[in-house]
Length: 196
Image 1 (cartoon, helix red, strand yellow):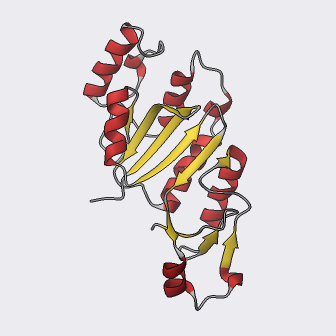
Image 2 (spheres, rainbow, N blue to C red):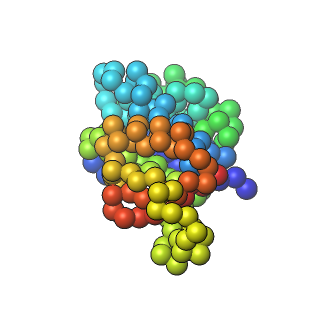
Image 3 (cartoon, rainbow, N blue to C red):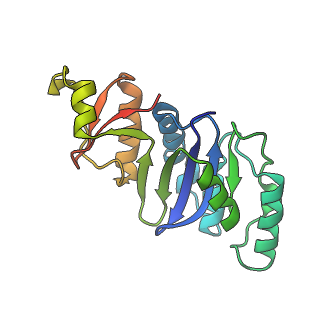
């Protein structure tokens, strides 16, 4: 079984769309996906509604919508229970490794249930909760990393569970520039390592 990722877009804490990836809940891979979303042209474009923007952001690569999710979404759009978007123009899903898009409440909940790691992007608050790291409690840290000097810890000036978009981009760049076995500590005092 792969490290299963849920990349979710919310508005003021309410999920409006997500993508499930079967093999992507590794810190480096997830950081690459997040950075692509946050630095994409789509982030600054105007859309008729936030659901349309979320779909554009979550389908930058090979992500697509499964057949059953498309049918449910069309029904909800037609009945006015989802914002007006053209569900037919969303690329069909290839497979779970490329990303399965969910925009219905049932689909969103289902893909959440599959996830082992989750990243939440809140478009209204302009924040990111990056939940694809392995937090170390004091005992684990002492057992695993005690031989290392504190100089070996990469200090982060933000809380990875509540970053601004700018901090999240910086975090992604830091992850990609540091060693796989690096220890990190964020402003909350939490120590963590990458999942790789």
